[in-house]
Length: 69
Image (cartoon, rainbow, N blue to C red; front, side, top):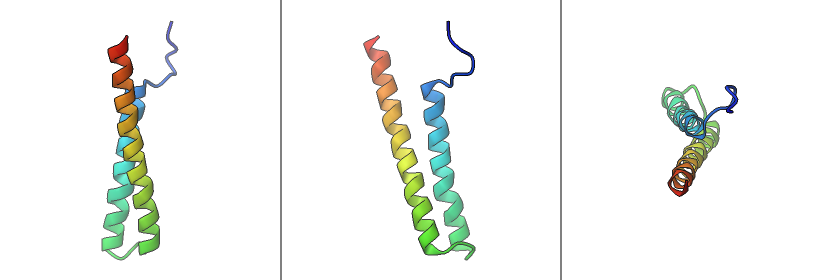
């Protein structure tokens, strides 16, 4: 029996991708308007990019596991 408090892997991947998107777009808009310096933008951009990359690899791994079962 499944626990209702457990988050499915697909949902977690989507949430990670959305968080990564907002960590790229949000600081970019702030940097364009002068509210954020370049070093902070660079750090947030890299973190957002890594989150999107991780969500893509989790998605591939979960779809591969579904094909095997």
